[in-house]
Length: 121
Length: 121
DNA sequence: TTGGAAATGATAATCATTTCCATTTTTGTG
DNA sequence: CACAAAAATGGAAATGATTATCATTTCCAA
Image (cartoon, rainbow over all chains, first blue to last red; front, side, top):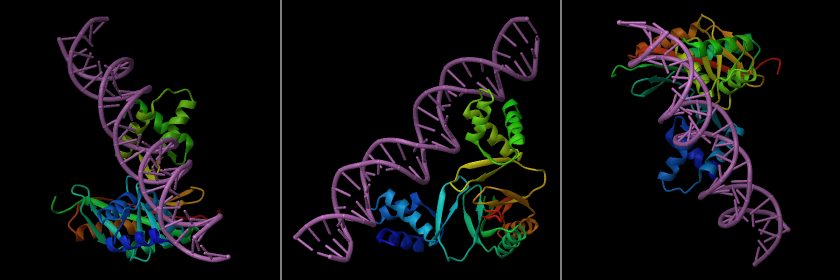
């Protein structure tokens, strides 16, 4: 755990949701921090190794990060305008757990997103 | 649906499991087919659009493809060996529908995958 | 203070995927 | 069959995220 790790944790706390390495780097730069992209990747990697942040993937495969321990939630995304709503997924948690048990899987995580057209569009 | 699409379906049938675009291209090349990488990507994209193949992601973000059965299903994927199990997701369908209604979304689809370590690994 | 280990960041390399575009193949029609 | 329009193809270059390299800087215990 070094300075960069802490900076990244701080940004992730502030932004709350998911962010890609590139986005996190831009945010820090915008705030006047001269941190390098390499360091951002390194810090994120080490935080993932230490299980301090989760790594998931956007639809296009880009890696996105979030602090573990955030309340786990899912997204409802508008295909047209990109607007997203955070939603509860209690049913999903149960489903994932049940299925994993049934097939003898352990260390399970899951992804679940809903896509559609929002009322404004 | 054109020749390339059919070639890709044939390879996917033969190989059975998941394969990346690059792998599929190499397989076809090895078999003497001069198909171009661009065409492989194009064919896969169109097959995904037509819901003939599923697209998911390896842990490193690379896209992998697989023929889908006719029933809508989800996947339980082993992070270690890549083995996948098709599972039912009745709860998910309901959840997606409910959430979409609640927030006024229409034309909704969803993704839901579970990742873990299978009993063999 | 100092020597070495760890951290940093600019740059270049890598790799999957997309875009561009010129060429070939297919298709519909007289 | 001939022929033009449309669709398909594939090589090369572009793109964009991520990783590797490596020289330089910072940290810290002795």
